[in-house]
Length: 439
Ligand code: SF4
Ligand code: SF4
Image 1 (cartoon, rainbow, N blue to C red):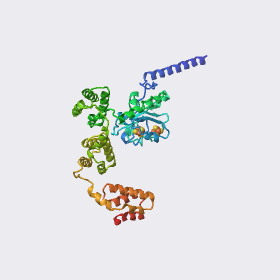
Image 2 (cartoon, rainbow, N blue to C red):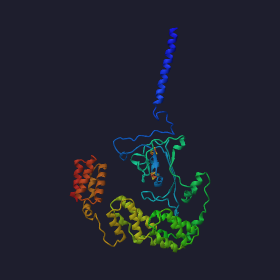
Image 3 (cartoon, rainbow, N blue to C red):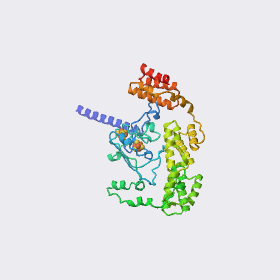
Image 4 (spheres, rainbow, N blue to C red):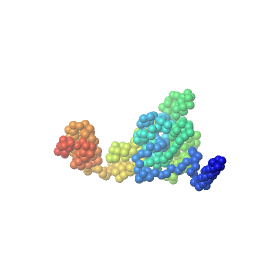
């Protein structure tokens, strides 16, 4: 009997002890230690400190992002992807189209409209291979060295698998049609391609169809402003507005885009007085003869030693010449393009001065060393029996010569390069030394 009451007592005692413990935990609970209502609530992610700055990371394997406004639709990333998880579709405006796809932040003129740019992140293996060949650096992994462009995303889980296909391009139907993509749109919708007013437009320009006269708008030097102005100009002319009404429309469009400045007053004046349509019969031939921009010689740009600078300058030259700009405007366009690329140096200034007034003798910074270098005969390097070593030696030779180095420096540089590559043998060193003897 005593045992019976003892058990009841022990049971009650342990029940009260348990209750006390629960009450103790209940009263001393901390906030946010209970279940987190994920995905509505998330823990803050701690900053990682691994001893160096985010910018110094070589690469982070995070989520891919595309700055679509900078994408030129070159498909290099698609070709690089080993699992084919990038899909790009672009629309190329037909020849003679007024559609301007715009420029990238690097100043590259886009040639097409990227209508679709999808990355299927359910298939992506985050190898980062697609980012390397991109000429505009517009596809990249977020965070790390790219955190200034796009903050890292630690998590981008979705309820539906389809939402993991990231769609970066989203042009409107109007834009696609304006770029000449009516067929593309019809195909997307599974419709037959729209009927084209076939041969008619081709035949007409050959005879005497009046054309829109873009001469007054072409006087605008800034490419972006010009493109906006052209759009408004075309719309106004097509709507049958008078010259002064067209000038008002163009001015208004530029003001709305924040691109209007008092420098453009003269352009607006000339639009207000211009013949909006030209009688394009025999006229176009005349234009072709007049367009070589005051007889500017593109070959003068070969004096620019930096390859990238030379490329940008030539591209700007060609674009400006094609638009029929005069000599001064061409030089200004080149200067603007190089300034935008941070490549406007004293050397460029000298070359542009020479381009603008070819009669005057320019200051040629690298003239003196150039006379010394050609004294060496590159054929001497043919004595190097190993193909790879010979190639490397010749490449270094050419680069040093192009940089206007002295013969002694060229020889030293070739030797050093081979040594660094572990390819310099006493036999090869002798051949390289004989460069000077031969000279
Ligand atoms: S990270 Fe690799 S797998 Fe993913 S899209 Fe780029 S190339 Fe393809
Ligand atoms: S490589 Fe760069 S520019 Fe070319 S399509 Fe891909 S993202 Fe666009």
